[in-house]
Length: 108
Length: 201
Image (cartoon, rainbow over all chains, first blue to last red):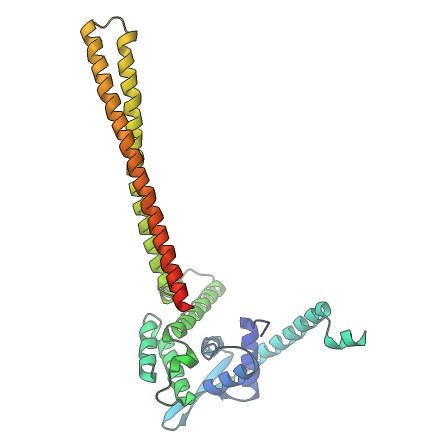
């Protein structure tokens, strides 16, 4: 990947995935790894941080004689996600205005 | 590395973290390793990196979070724990770094010590030469001294002058040894590095 994923963007992506459905560490990591270039140990600190700041909460479900810890988005988490989304669109539009989108280039 | 070894080492590396943070991390990785569903002979580190790397990420992130909390609260309470975490972070970083800093400091101190001894010898040599010459000539310029005293001054001047010349020569020899010592150390280092790089390649 040419462009680096910054910490807030990674937070935003994790919140986005968890908003769709509750996930546990492994599936979340695989889902994010399918799209962006991160290592398998990248997300634990992110999840912990989001949990500590009250944007995510956890609950355990027994699975094959052990627990699986699921992550769920909280109302403040949803709010933060909305903020992240609008920030992303602003940022994307600004960069597009400098960079030019592929459509604009072919139209000329 | 198998699961148990991995978690034990992670536990050890996080031993100075708050108990709650440590347990949470261990639980998460224990679960994650189970979910990886690897055949027993597979190395977990291929997936997760070494326990050291994992611990480093956790410590770094906890430190950042604590600093942020601190800035929000704007108090100095808990400042000690931040310093503690930063120190932990340094030790969790590749161990070569702090060790290298220490080794370089020791070598540097040693070189400065030897250098200043040589410098001091040189200074005393040169001052002996100067004072020797000065003593030698006082015999001529002060007429009030008797003949005997003038000869004594001549003699003393020559002795000190000779001593000074010897000291200066000694200094030059020592300085040469010193320089060749340093250059041989540097050359050895360089050739070792080259050999290592050649091996890696």
